[in-house]
Image (cartoon, rainbow, N blue to C red; front, side, top):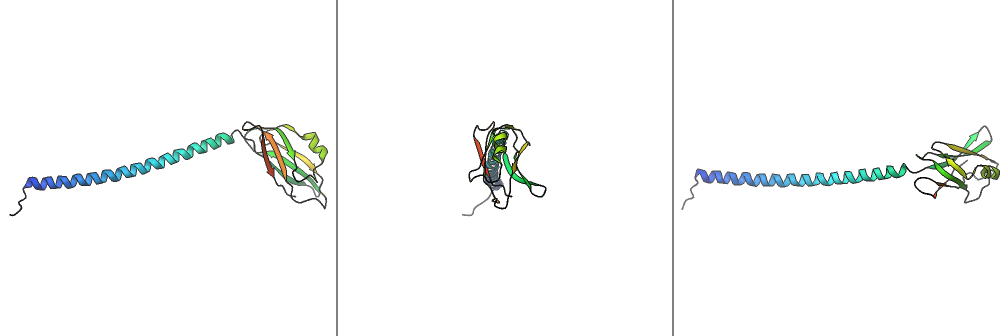
Length: 157
């Protein structure tokens, strides 16, 4: 028994093949769309995290300290605020001991009521041959982010 193909059988077969191809392409498109949505969701999450971090940094003061040399033998300890808000009730401690900053300087200037953005304060340092080259300095302050911030810095001579 020979198989006879009529023109309608050929058209039906082509329609079936076209339908199968369209279904396959739709599945591919949906996979790409899903991948794009996942990528977009990750990007949105990262943008939200970045915005949260910027929001937090907009409320923080960022204090630092370094020794600066003036002339041949005069040194100062410079404490500055490079954050975006003012630091309040700034205090300085020396966890490993203080052998170079004059105590009367610390007593006169600290606790400092307000240290504005890009403002600094300098303390006279009495440097001699036996002075350590690296000092641990603990900076304590309050700002819009927290009432008790602290940072330990290690300036060197």
